[in-house]
Length: 430
Length: 163
Image 1 (cartoon, each protein chain N blue to C red):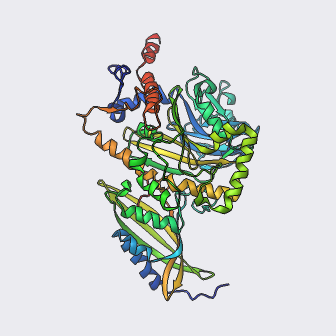
Image 2 (tube, each protein chain N blue to C red; image 1 turned 90 degrees about the vertical axis):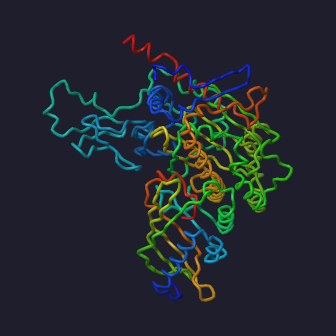
C-alpha cells in the first residue's frame, strides 16, 4: 500500500465532515500494512500481572498474531517470551497455563528456564565453539513494560516508552486500578469468541454511545423489568458525560450510567441487604480520594479504547477486551473480567452476575454488537458505497457521548500510521 | 443419601428430546414450562468448563428471572442477534441417568447443536449436565448446564439462541 493511498480518511474540519474509506475494512493489502505499521509499531496488550501471581506461573496466548508466553520467572520478574524454540521452531510451551520451572521443547528436548535462558541442549558437544547457549535463549519483544498491572509489548525498539505512549489514557487506567488498595486481578474464565467483521468495527463499537438505544433496546427493557428506574433518566444524554481524545489514538467516554456498579453504586436489584455495604465501600473511597474523585470512580462509567486493540470498559462490571484480525473480515476476541484482588466472594459473585447481564458472547448486549459488526461487514460488499460517515458532533464545542469524537481520535492516529512515508524512506536508506 | 427414585432413561430421553424440539422450533414459552420456578441455565467458559459461576466468568449464568427475560427478548423483535432467527438443529445422544443429589436427578447427555444463519453453519459441541426434579409426577428441569467442547466460540462468535 506504500504505492497509492494518500489517506483513508476525509477530515474536513471546516465543514464538519469526517469519512472513512471502507477499503480500510475490506482490503487484504490494508491488513498486511496494518500488521507492519500498526501492530508492529504500537504497544500491544499482553496480559495482566495478576494472571501469573507466583514464580513459574505462565500463560501461553496469541498476541498480535504471535504465540507468546507470559511468565513470572524464578526471580519474580514477569516476562513476555516468544513461544518458539530457537533451534528449529516448535512451540516450547504447549499448555494454556500452569506453573513450570522450565519449558522443554518436545522436538529435540532443548530446555529453557522460566527466565527464557537456554539451560539444556542434548548432545551439546556436537556444536562448534561458535555456538553459545547464551545467544539461544527464547526471544522476547524488544520492549516489554507494564502500567498499573497491565502488561504491554512493543516490537519497535525505537518506540516511545509505554508511559508516554499511554498519554492521557493513564488517568483512566488509574481510575480503574485505584478501585482496590491491594491491586486488581483478572477473574478466572476467559471469554474467547470472534466476529466475522473487521477488527476496527469493534474498536468503534466499544465506545459508541450513539448505538446504545437502538442496538441495545432489549437491555434497557431488561433493566426496567428488574426494577431499575429509568424514568427521568435520559440514558442517551446523561447529565454528566464527556468524550475525550486522550492522544496517540486513545479515547474515552465517561458518563453517569443507569446501571448499578459493583464499585460502588447501589441500585435496587442488588438488594436492600447490600445497601449498607455499598455505602460503607463508598465511604472508604471518599476517605481515600476525597468526594470528587470517589464519585468519579464509583458513579461514572468509562468506555476506554487504548490504541490500537485494547478496550477497558468499566461499566456495569469491568471488562478487559482485546482482539486481532485473522483476515480483513474476521477477528478473534478475548475478554476477561477485572476485579479488586481483595473482593469478597459475595461481592465477586454480584460483579460477575452484573457483568453477564450485558457483556460477553452470551450476554444481553454483546451478541447484538457482534451482529451489527457482521452486518456492516456484509454491507461493505457494496463497493459502490465507498465511505463510512463518522462526523457526529464534529462542530460541537463539547461533543457528547453519542457523538463520534472518540472514533475520529482513533482513525486520525490509525490513518497517520498507515500513510506516513516512514517505511518507504527507511527502505530507501537501507 | 438419596431417597429419590431414579427415572428410566427412556423417560429422561423423552424430556430431553421434547426440549430439543421446542427449542429448535422456537416454542420458547412452552420450553419455559419444562423448567422449575427456580431454574438455572449456565454455559461455563471454554477454558474453565468445570467452573463455578460465583467465582468464574461464565458465558451465560442465568437465574430464573434472567431465563424468562432471555426468552421474552428472543421472542420480541429487538434481539437483533436472533432477528432474523437462527435455524438450529440439536442432536442429543449418550443420555445417562448418573445418580441423585437430594431430590435432584442427575442426568448427562452429549449434544451437537448446529446453527444456520446467513448461510453459515456453526456447530456447538459438548455435553449437558442436568438436574431434574419430579413435580406433580412430571420431570422438570431445575438446572441445565451446557458445557462446550469447542475450545473457543470461533467462528461462532456468540451464543445468541438458547444452547
